[in-house]
Image 1 (cartoon, helix red, strand yellow):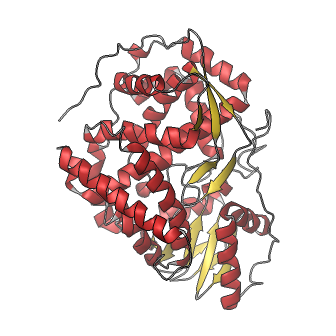
Image 2: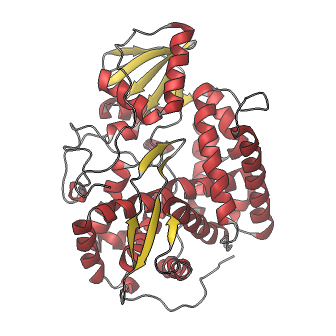
Image 3: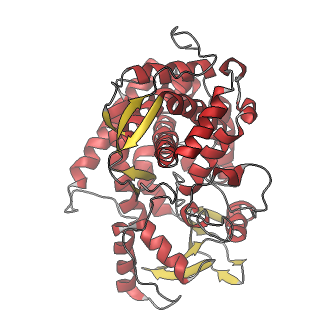
Length: 445
């Protein structure tokens, strides 16, 4: 990884097209193949051709890729009631998310989110630090690990403790591997609206069956062992465990890779953390004492937003957006991967510059949305930010991460580092001030 410019090149260049140049079934097939080869490259190519809003035919539907912040905000907030998730994609996602609160629409979705939100609360800060310490104790000095898998397993275990009062450390790796497979399957299925069944000539078919079986087995185990309110609906369990893997885990991995690449920023962050007594940190608002820590996480999620392209949505009525007429039945896609990397809103967009999030800014609404927008934004944003901040503080204080090869982004259903093999090098004598003792983590009924 480069020390000054973020190593996230597009691996393949796709020839740009003019709006309306492609039509018919063959055009739809070409685009679908391009998405499967490299969705990040495909999005970049569309953006290069038309940086604000672009339309194309894909099969029987017209698809709009929306990148301009004002248009993103208009569609996701102002006109949110006029868009519904594209039903074929929704059906594919229900294979593992069932009819959880994330799969619902309209008033029913808002009502279900309101019921779930009070139960999505972070664990005590002491418990996050204890888990990070316990997990860290299991990593030998100089160990070579897949950082993405390591942080995914850690985050699943943290979520299991926080939301369900359970120790999922033994189950975390099979859950993480199952979610990784389903992320690849989801890209294929949600972009086509076709389920990956026995008829499809791919090794993904048996892997998908194993992943679904594994996830269901683990969910049944959690539901049988926990008495927490969130376990009442099994579909919600799958959604929450996958969210831990795809957001907290991925962001912890990306952020540590970025800090390894930028030692000056890493050292400044460590200096800030040295001045914090963690006995004084009990809630998200207390992290105002660590502005660089927050800014590092925000900048990491700008460059590598876990949900880099939101699930396609379909218009229920015609809309005018930035001079374009979007018709009823058209499909709309927005991508934080593209909008976050537009030089108009973030100068020098591929550089890791946490100072973007220190002090005031004049970015338009809709320019930054790592957790989504409006009432469809992730209901666990507060929990995720506290988990990320406290966990990152521990990991960056106690370990140097040495990437063993260049790391590329992999745009499956979520954005993950590909082949993120690293070496864990302990920092002798390093410790956070105010670390709790090694007493067992709090488990509440």
